[in-house]
Image 1 (cartoon, rainbow over the protein chains, first blue to last red):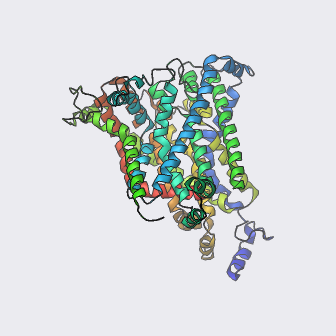
Image 2: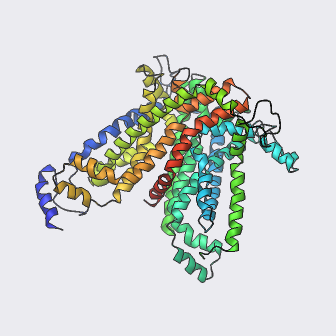
Image 3: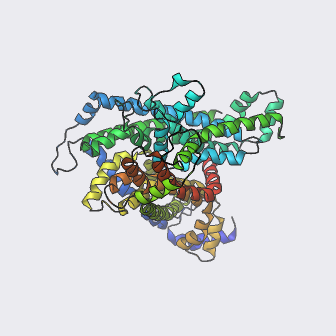
Length: 315
Length: 273
């Protein structure tokens, strides 16, 4: 340790220094710095923490959002939620949508990243092309695809033009297809986001290791699985988490295109929260739905984090 | 392995085809927007007689000019506050090893797991009680609160990789902690500040649900709400609707064009961190 640092340590000792040492590169006297947190803490408490606690509290009442009188009704809202067919349907839809979107955004994003992480000349331009939908307003994307999906719209026209006319469908109007059609919108919108993160992760894969593996006779799939994948683990973790949370909370794309229909085939917890609170005035029921959604997000995020951390550790 | 071979050429051709398929929706967007209302041919056929008439009509009828101004104000003010408060909070969280520091860090990270829907309704009623509905102030407060955890996370990750030598040098030269932060640490955070600016700017500009809730029925609309209500009025006049969609996206595309390098670099540093 240099003398200058020692001098400073002594001179700062009065400011709550801890002279016992520990990790030398970290400062231990930081008590006076806590007020740096205050400007971030106030809006965070006001916007996130307090309303979330209130939300959990409301979910155990019969409050309608306007009337100052309300009473505690225990778990009634939750019992109602799981005996309400529409709500159960929404739970299933939420999970299905999140899983489809997570899997395909990542498969496509990874595929694009691997393809662009080669010598091809147009890779910078292509990276821009695939990333561009990320910056477009979700509302705009949703309206655009609503038109693309119309029965006499571009997709069906293309299908007819190439002689696959019998594959034409009413993409958003058919309850069997609507949820899948909405996932395609989200995948188109966010695959480029996953791609950019995977590309960043691929920069950390040393060429020498790949060449050495190739010399040892590893084919492209073996090279990917044993060399690239372990080094890509942080990018995979980040991408899966981001995609899953995005999928679970999706609102814009659904609200603009189908508003949860037809026949509740695209109703998710997000749209149900909004509908119950602001169309039906069922604040406390809506709060219970939001609590269930939160539990989904938290449980899935923690399970995934644990699981991925373990596989990162193994490889 | 590093040469451009016929295989690379094949891969390049394949990727260009994929890119064309990927761009198909964008082609439709532009194609319909520049098509005169009288043209009833297939939406996939290129327009033979392109016109800007739809853009003029969309601009005049949609109130998008006002909405863009509103969105710009909300975005700039929110993002500026987010940057300042997150960078400040990240400083002790990354540098202080006392127990309160890591506790506070985890407390902020809870915010990444709580879906905003949970607090949506109670927050709305609080804002109503405070008489703040209809203006842009509640939106700014909400964006700051919602985006602090994520921005803080990026800053802390980044700051932990920066050696403390510069700050120590500054404090030897007599700077207090606040000066060390504003003159030394904050400038060092520039790369990640770029990322924080862009990702939060994008989020704020694109957000639909909160302005729908807080601003619908007022004249203070943001771009997504203006687009949404405009489409409701101009049902199936797709040429005009698509022109409005393009107008709503142009400001973001301009920003994206200038900032894409630092955005992609910033995302990269986030993953390696």
